[in-house]
Image 1 (cartoon, rainbow, N blue to C red):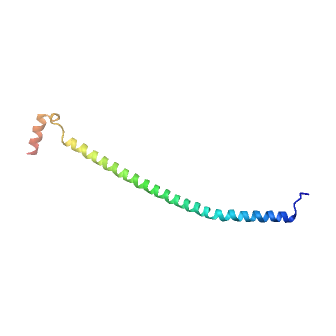
Image 2 (image 1 turned 45 degrees about the horizontal axis):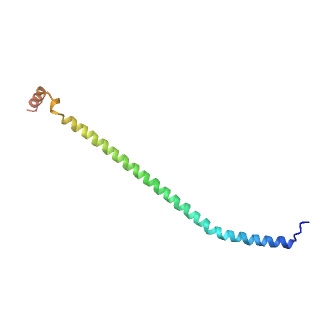
Image 3 (image 1 turned 90 degrees about the vertical axis):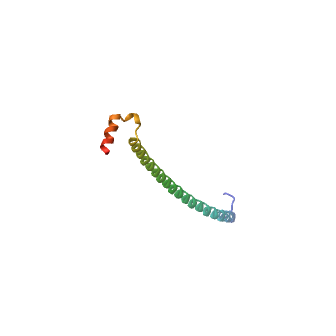
Length: 99
């Protein structure tokens, strides 16, 4: 025999029940806060992803613009070559062809 009566078990059960009820009451607002924080985290993750995509697009645009400017610069360099690379005879024939 354990030495505990049914009343003892019932009293312990009631105390445990009240304690669990108190725990549940304290957990409810914490669970709501955790849910709100999870939702905020998800919103921030989406914002970061969108910002990263925008940044990547801007980087691509800048790289494309740089490539276009490099091509234009190469073309300008080809058109304006240094004097010593043009032979005198070539310059004369070019001038004659313009007439």
